[in-house]
Image 1 (cartoon, rainbow, N blue to C red):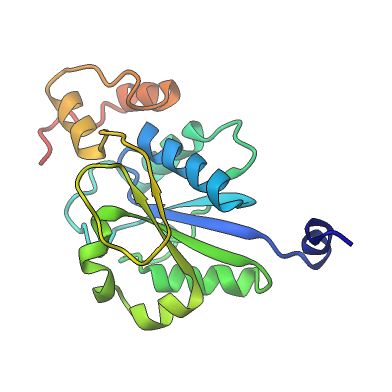
Image 2: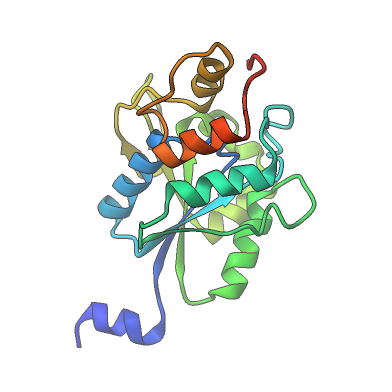
Length: 200
């Protein structure tokens, strides 16, 4: 029996878990997620929008429901991309340890990969219950190619100079964000008049 058939029978899947504020979700998120899916041979990637990130408590501009709306629109039609609202449905802050614990309880036979941006590396060891978290999941670093990084974790790298901060600033100053976010996300930002105030 082929390994793929065995994996299907026992329900074992390789799942990437991509958490973040996604304020807004943009093309760099999606490109790196697709790259991770292909290079790591993942079966699917679950995007998990945070209610309030413990590392960015003052930086969330759009409400949780609007960020979920943008995320849903951004991944529509992607069979291997999905999202889970477990963090926005529980009291903040959104700890990755709690998220991974719940996902592993739901899917005890699956293998999880925690996808993190390279900007998280300097403070990763300060994350809530990090030693236990590291035993629960394989961390994977998503690097947009800006600056050098040192990491023992698998790294997915593409040079993509796009950030949510830049997008919010462009909207606040009246500049275009076309091609930086999916068209459906651009429409939602305009419809809800998001990010009109200057962002840092």
